[in-house]
Image 1: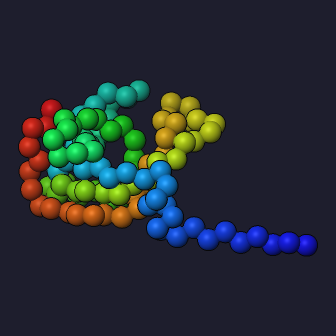
Image 2: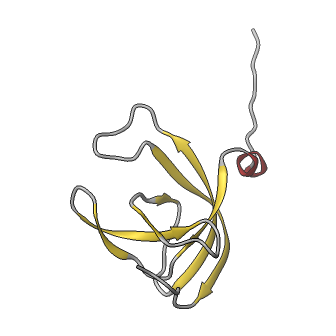
Length: 105
């Protein structure tokens, strides 16, 4: 009988399907199936803000702060009805700065 142990550290997660995103200091009204309050995110400082319709698991958002986050993305299969096929989870907060984000839609 063999037992295989798998140890997944946060470094393993950071190396896999992770990315850095910037979350704006304010949410905006957006339209999904119903009226929602969406995060505005971008991947680079010079990018335009985009609506983010999903939740970020483990992230406690506080309005008035702009965040830089390291997140992981995992494909969900089967996809829940009326939901995204991608699950986004917070790995860590890189920075949290009290400010008003500029150039919001």
